Image 1 (tube, rainbow, N blue to C red):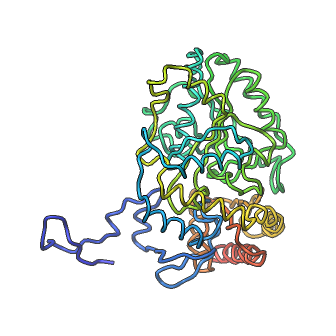
Image 2: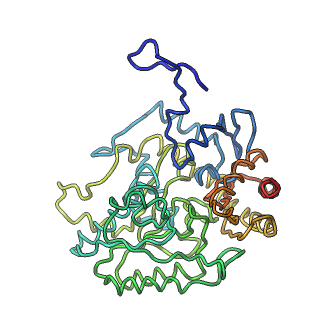
Image 3: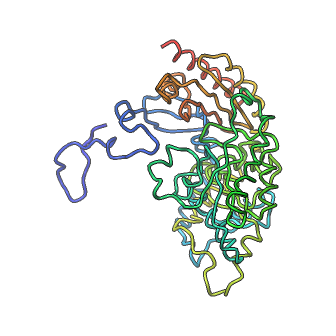
Length: 453
């Protein structure tokens, strides 16, 4: 890993350059990783192959984004064909037909074909876009005092400045406090170990926590609040499952006070709960929905916002020669991402993979809860084809036990996703029942091994 690298404009580099030091890696213990790197060489189906030729099961579908498995032939073919036909098309004042068709398919898949879709490149951009749409919507309707947004503790909405402002994970926020949006408040999170430990599916306790939104309305006045943003299922903080009736109550309160409800479905969108979107799983319709990740099966970056048709229409009331919404990205609706999106939806529909995720959900639930009595396990929770195993932190060293589980898991043939001391599990939809059960057995061996060390 220490080859001499050619440097632009220099024929003879003065010394060896270690490429491991050149990439400042995201959300990574850079020094620890680079002292003992574990590198991925290839991927196919539900497995990665490491450079040491070790084969590991992909326990979190990439990062929630490859539910159809790696190197899906239909997606590979679609992207390859597309780059030969149209590699880039601007989205400002021009368009290409497949992007409009993909927008229509996404709206239909979400169950509201009249909705409009605004394309971006990631979940973080989708959240910041949704916040702009929400505040802009009230402004174009003459309700310009509605500028406040309500997020939730432990919420994760990406790493844009809007996303960390409405998000509620302290380590993501504290360094950037001076840069965050003003006028943001937070609902309490919904996790109570005392009342929810080892719940299967939706906890029965906690719907009343939604009523705290009424307290915030009383504190700030509804006339100042533009929107409330929540993840239907909180993912990056450790899979916090909403109490039964909680999201329904949030919907009622938002409707009562004229506030928009935004669902961040970057993780739950496109089948993770056995329905195309979590809004359909819960039977609760938001006003704006963010999506990303699985729309292209992780092959090409893409995200977006699904907006109610009347929200779009509110922006269209001005003169036709004036741009209605001053927002967008160079790569919005990128042809390669669009091609991957069409192919991903084709696979989900033709191979009935969303239905398969629903079928596997019960297999995962039964298997993961057998870990209840394993060393250091303090909670297990699940919903759809997703689960979390929470470990007791090592004394005075939060996150260390989780990292040890990650490293040992590689030796056991599984690639785990750790959120501190919480193991996240969201296997690909293409997994077999045997692979899901084998994944849990590998987790069991991992937990016993780190307890014995």
